[in-house]
Figure 1: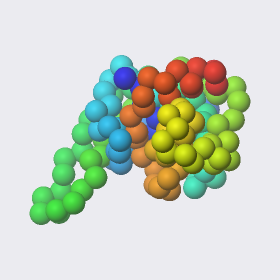
Figure 2: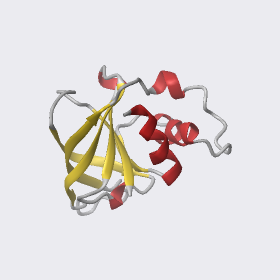
Figure 3: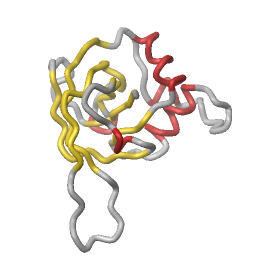
Figure 4: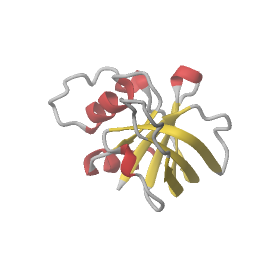
Length: 136
């Protein structure tokens, strides 16, 4: 399966990224070693959006905190960079895709990554994963 991760990326050129305790949504908690992941350097932290495609080398669920009622699942994840994005894709390019029912991959990405400003790991449909192929 393919995933997208939006996070603060301190070194956008790094060959590996270690991202501890990442929040998951929209199926992101099922991320596992061997999965493809599209890395977005969060615009909230000054990043440009999509920067790379990689392969998950390690994914470990973070244990829930006892006695806390509502918790978003979190995962420690390590990613090996496989390719660099050749053209931009971020909030500015996806902003106009707001018809949540149109079925377009751009709309799915806008909804999952930017409807809420939080950094997160999200699962992708096959259509959205295929769409990313045009960026590498």
